Length: 302
Image 1 (tube, helix red, strand yellow):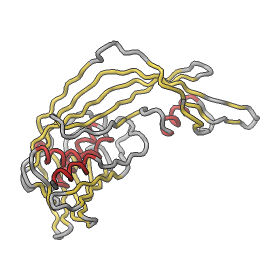
Image 2: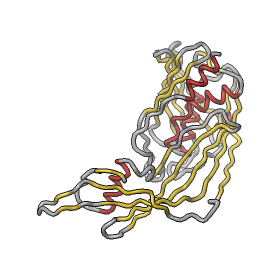
Image 3: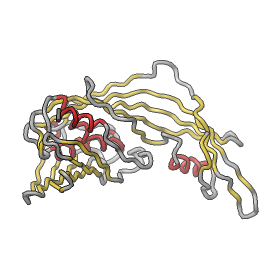
Image 4: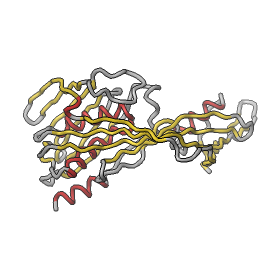
């Protein structure tokens, strides 16, 4: 019964997001702390805080019933610093682990394959020839310049679907593995695939443990885990057109979804680039590309 309740609670975890994540090639700096929780095999609340200072790194703070139990800092070694879109399985991970409860610290390097393995990628072309389809319109607030001129700017948004890529990985965890370390390695790896996805690393480990018939107690994995997950990436072109002048700009965007093979867990959609377009962040950046005066804000989306 505890497992069933824990699984249901895990599936309903709330993720906190701010603005869309922009492409890794544009910036190696990642921001924000993601928080997720689950109920372990003893009925205690495990809360995980994950952050990343740059691609290929992850910091994890692991709490049980509100008490900080341990921390883990993970760095993927031997990866490119920019423009990476896959993981080198021959690389290693540097792990710095601090057991707060017992005042013990360890620093060591292990093969990445101890935690993630069997990677392969497949790409599917669109099932039919894609063309731009109208999505809606961004209506900006009226802007008045110093001469009293009035501007009522609008952008029409169109979207075109491109190829879909599946990247497969296997989550590995030996019996007795510290959950925060495994979560940290998954999070660091997911920053390489997509910065927006590092938050799901807690869910991936817990769902993989449940699928393997094991559990997590006191921050320790109680049985061996080897469960495959995949990241599905769909590429999009987003076209913005100035309603008054017909000027156009085209932007790249990606949509991600992560899931365990054979079911058991499936995330919501996550975005990188200029999707979803009905956000203030995207509206702002598009406005700056079209007009040089002060951003007036958005009055509505239609």
